Image 1 (cartoon, one colour):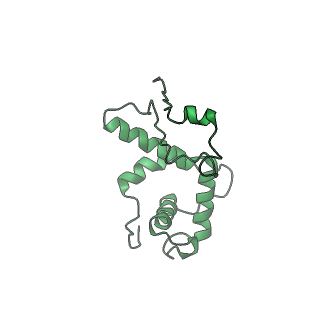
Image 2: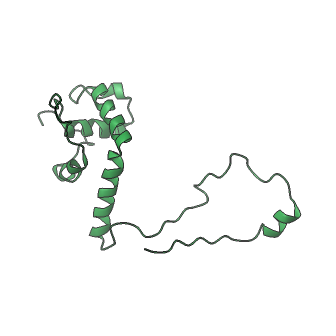
Image 3: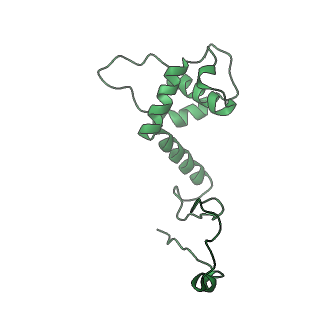
Length: 140
């Protein structure tokens, strides 16, 4: 890289882990003219700084190019592939199975309805109000 580095830039090690998750250039077309590491550096710059796409510094790829790749990665599942790859790596490093065998959903973070509270107290609601629901996911 012949530009100043930003704190959001990928290190060589991070790039080595993420690069295999990125799609190859489409065959038969014009060769890729943009460095994919710089595209990711620009995306991480926007995410980290919270700036608008149009405010990406001029020493990174053009904002339209970066935004186009960001949208394409969303549509094709690249971000999920990167996330899953890194999660599996971290779990293995800590001596765990690569994929989780259970999940916990907190009722405070799950929206069930936009209507707050109950619509009134009926005998049926009164009898089940104190009961707890227990969820269990069998391990595979």
